[in-house]
Image (cartoon, rainbow over all chains, first blue to last red; front, side, top):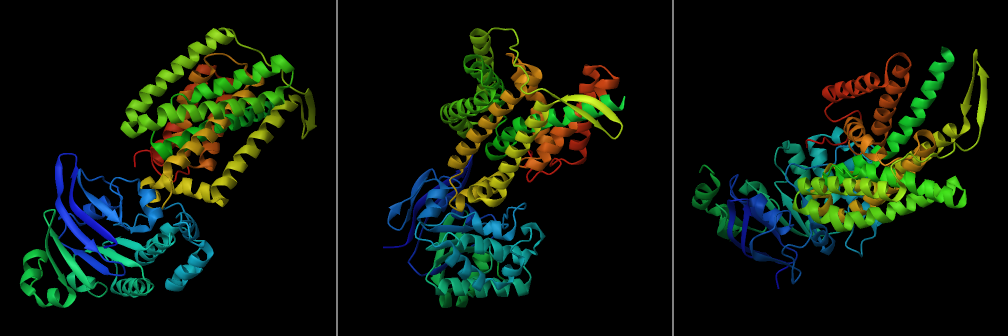
Length: 236
Length: 292
């Protein structure tokens, strides 16, 4: 059984019809990318999974349980955590306070998890008492990944985790995601870049105009320039 | 003249701290739920009346303060569960209108139960003779006690927000409730708790204000406009900003009333706050803007 399964998801913002029947699945331990150009429904898919917007039709099944429309905090406590688009730090909180906000999945030992998080992101340790708004963009991205990890999730959703970062910061984020994935956490992340996504992901779905139009493994998609050009705007 | 000035400064600080207690709950509820709690002043009034009633029954003012906090907390939970939570989920505007209704009902209920005339609470303790630095005047000890109590409660709230998980989660939810929720924070439960604490503190403020202003049906409604301005100017979720804004307004009113009439003093005080809001849209020490 898939760890996460979306079945025929239809999501609207008011009258705007965004997701028009999205179905996809992630197995336990996978790293899966959701690829697509801007405005195709990647963020809405992630928001629908976390109930930040409730789908009008279809279902989200996580760990065998239908969680469609559950409150976001209940989904988080079940083991799904989010790294949102645009980072969305809490500007008035310190780095350490960010790591105190998350409520764990019940079996989480917070001090042990904090040690793990600071091993993955040692650059945060010396800034624990600094205001999060004073961090660089790359450091803020590491902080929000660390914040998401503090719930001790079984699955991490990341919305454009490399967007707007310097090449050095992107390298660090990729390294960190590989470590996190190596501990058994399932990754599902949205990205506009096929090349960057496959530095972490094993396979990917491509979304266009609110529908999944293609799915493939890493080698197949990287070798298929025609699909990349058609759906992702890659020049080949 | 110096004696009058110092007396008015002390009055300004005492009244400012009482205002800060009222505005604090308002700013937290506004930040967490996006609701202007128009009924907040009713809890200030209810606290005053409960304190008066307990004092009239058993002759103990301090027991009255404790009862005021407890009664306001219980009524606060009921109000949250029956009106604030369900209506806020539908529309903050509907919640605002319902809370205006609650404040009108409570005003008429107070008139019916306690009558339209002000109830006088005697000022506990006597007066202290202050003679130092060329000053020579008498001042009620109670005002110093009220200052100390208000400072203790505000410091307690500050510790709650800075050093406890629930306080930090509340601050996080004020800044971004959607993301706080995605981090497993039950924002609804945090809101219920903070609403209850805010109402209890407003009740305490009403009780503390009793001996200063007397207790009367309109005391909450008269205050609510000023409290909104203090909450917004102080900055949502900021205890320090709320205290500063409340003290600015109370001191401006208190000191300017020596030289000009009370109504003009009010105009002056609000003008000062509006200028601050124009210069700093997030308020003096706000962690999130009302407009966000």
